[in-house]
Image (cartoon, rainbow, N blue to C red; front, side):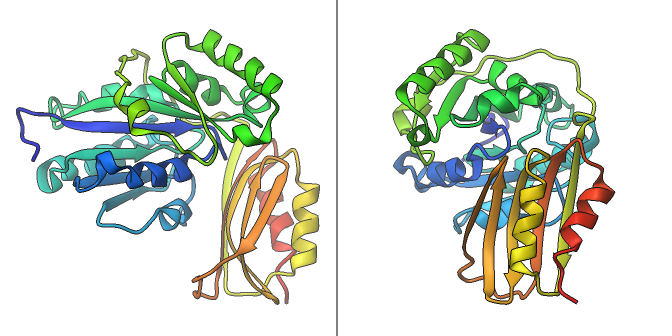
Length: 305
């Protein structure tokens, strides 16, 4: 068990929108090296619905969800420090796993852990950054936090390698190495990293001023309704919002039944929502260069009267 003289290790998971962080989190929780450990999870997403938390594999892990702002920026500092204080004083786990939202600026965590109420009680074991091999280059071109996450990572997990060619993967590897020459890299599909890769990481502290809030061109919104959604109209609306929606995910109740919908940049994925019986549509969205009002109005046009 951890005590005041032995800081609790922290593993930080970062990565841009849709890179596969929740898949990676579930993979980590299944590793034999973490089996039997007492783990506390902090899951951060942009929006109040807590969808990511519902996608984590069930287990005896104490969960804390921070659902406003991006983790490790000034606007969520109070919530974050409060959760860590409770973890260190009451839970005292063997490991803290933190999944940051895809638009998080990660540099702040070092200073947050230096808060007087937390100083000496936690130590970052590694900052692990997830990169989507298919979409990273185009996302990094306009979303500053994407490059910052790579720059300050101790380990880079290049995910979705099954969706790109060897040549494209080679170019991406060179780009990531130029951005962060000291971070170890691993290339995987479906977040399948090994304990050996994780054990080989060592943390490099980054010193940056506290960041403000998210990029000014970004907007977050959510939809929760008991009404049925017209499937054809909904998919047409998503088609019209391509290039503006960076990430959309959640459960949508169509006349044909409930589906889990994801939109990762321009790709829309749909699968049956097994076990979802609430009868509600619950969606979280992050968009770029569109007003919240226009985004909400567009999505609401799919609600059946």
